[in-house]
Image 1 (spheres, helix red, strand yellow):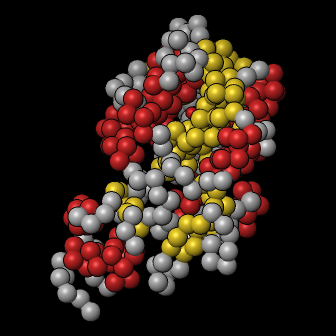
Image 2 (cartoon, rainbow, N blue to C red):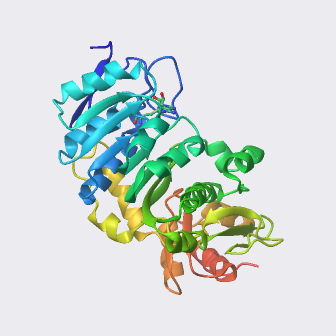
Image 3 (cartoon, helix red, strand yellow):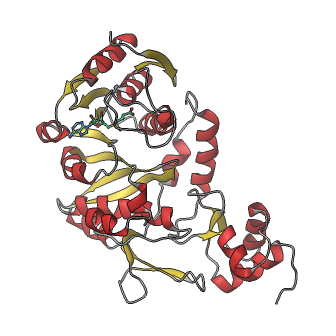
Length: 368
Ligand SMILES: C[S@@+](CC[C@H](N)C(=O)[O-])C[C@H]1O[C@@H](n2cnc3c(N)ncnc32)[C@H](O)[C@@H]1O
């Protein structure tokens, strides 16, 4: 047994290195990687697979200690899980974690994920890299069965959210957006990249659950087979326009002189039917999972969002409470919180109406 400490996560025993991350993106140190904060991320994998019991063959392609793989195998005994990592130092941890939980449905494997995913297909393929998943996407797409699910993490938030524009353009072949929509746009750039990778082999996609949290983006994508599915998926990609002086913003399927940010996925982020079936019981981060599910379940599919702080400083009025503002907007149209930050929301109302109701909700009935 390697030197480490044992923790309990979601009812699964996990041996992790003594030195490990407990927040942020974590570091690529000399030891095997483990980040406690990603328990929420792993909870969601377990919940999603529990809601989709037909997904049996699971590849945790970048498993490190095997934390996600053993959680899936232990908490969902009907699955067959491969816990793969190319770092030999990971093997003693993976083996110890399989033994600790007395698992017969989890197999350790040391090797490049590209080899694993070219040898056989899986119902569920999980990519959880340091940084960008782009170098591994092609292998993941090919190793995922025709009706499988792809799970992809990206921790390179700085390029995706526009802090390193050139890097984003190189990696994702997409122009990122700065400002309050930067994480929404970063998430949708990642989704658009997965869509284009799938289309290369005549596959399309339907998002199951795609979110931004902490320091990372995460997408659960249902793969759809066939050229038609690929074409209709590509037809959902488009571009944002955003003017920080007027706050005007829009999404267009066509690129033009204003709509230059993207390409981004313009469709919905989540599958409401799947979210309705996802049960948080047994999660390590139960309260957080429950809160997040509530927001995701209500979230509107529109790719545009608004930020209370940005509107307040533009209109030079105090920020209203978000629930007060949402009630005011709902008296005329649709409005719901957006999950990317507690100060953001989506609405089907145009900017002038949002501004008028915003001023009202901020307590200033008349303002000029
Ligand atoms: C961020 S860690 C994974 C964390 C893990 N999924 C968890 O939940 O604790 C990324 C892992 O990917 C592994 N890795 C990087 N490139 C790989 C490749 N081409 N094939 C297999 N594993 C790879 C690294 O060795 C590292 O352990």
